[in-house]
Length: 327
Image 1: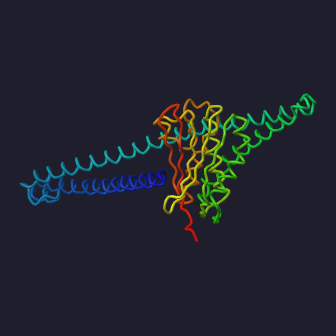
Image 2: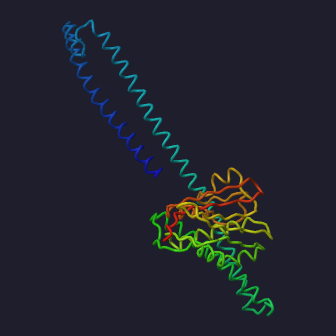
C-alpha cells in the first residue's frame, strides 16, 4: 500500500513537472514572437506599438509588466524547485526502502539457512549413525525422538516460509469453520509437548470452558504453535509456559505467558515485523513466526499484542478473536 501511494505521488509530481515544462516552452516561444514584433516596432521608432507587442497597455506600463513577469518567473521557479525536491525525497525514500529490503532479505537468508540446515544436519547424523549401527540399543528410542523433534522443527520452518509467501502473494485467509478454541489449544499443546520436554519446559493450559469461534483450524494451529515455540525458545529450563483461554464479551482472549528473557521497548515495537529477531539475534528462527501470527490473526478479524516488563521479566502475547455467540 505504501509503495503504491509513493508510485502515485511520484507519477503526479512527474506529470506536474512535465506540464510546467510544456507551459514554459509555449510561453517562451510566444515571448520570442513578442520580442520580434517589438523589435520591428522599435526599428520604426514606434514605442507604443512595441509596448503593446510585449503585452503592456502602453509604454508607461512596461515597468509594471516587468515587475509582474519577475514575480511570475520567481514563483514558478520556486514551485519547480519544490517539485524537484519532492522527486528527490521520493528517490531517497525508494533507495532506503530498497536497502531495508536487501538487509531484511540478507537477515532472512542467514536465519533461514541456520533454521533449516540445523535440523537437516541432525537428521543426517542420526540416519548415518543408525545405518552404521553406532547407536546403542538402549538409546535408539531417545535418538529417534530427537530426530522426530528436528523433523517437526524443519516442518515448522518450512510452513512459516511457505505461508508467508502465500500471504504476500494472495493476502487470503483459509476456509473458516465453527470450532472450539479450547480444543485447538489442547491440540497445539499436544503437538508441542515433545519440543517443550526436550527443553525442560512445562506447558500448562487453562481452558475452563468451550469457546466456539469461526476460524481456519490450520491457520490457528500455526498461530498457536508459533506462539508456543517462541515462548519455549526464550524460556529458561525448568520454567512454565502458560496458555489461558477465556471469553471477554464478544471476543475470545488467548494469552501465552512465559517467564523467559522478556522484551525491551525496541523489541516490542518491532516484534511482529517480518525477519525481526529480538535480543542479540542469535537465538535462531527465521524471524517470520510472530509476523505470521499477526497476519493470520488479523485475517480472522482479530488482533494480537505483546507485553513485557523488560529484559529477563518474561513476556505475554494476547490474541483477541471474535467468538461465536453461544446457542
